[in-house]
Length: 105
Image: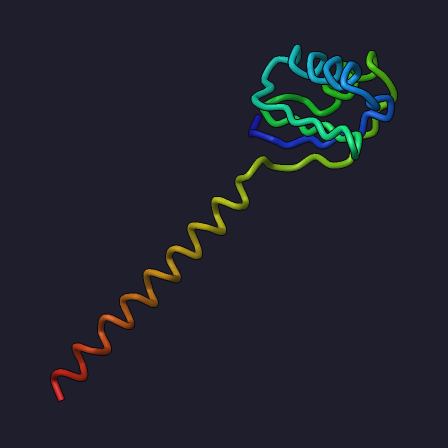
């Protein structure tokens, strides 16, 4: 299973105590690499090689849970950066070749 990012809304996460309980519940799941909690938006972001349903099921013990999104974890950004770097290198090569051609004239 590939790394995935699961964003959940824990509707009972309104204070620091419930935030801590949510984080601890998510941390108990095998395969979780990182957890981020946003108390203002009541969002919990879990990244790792785990099942999104298992995360939601575990968090139901803390309170009402909604799965907002499930997707790959940062893989898309890496691919985009590689493409940008390739394009920059190609542009640099083109710029390097132009002065050489001008010197030949």
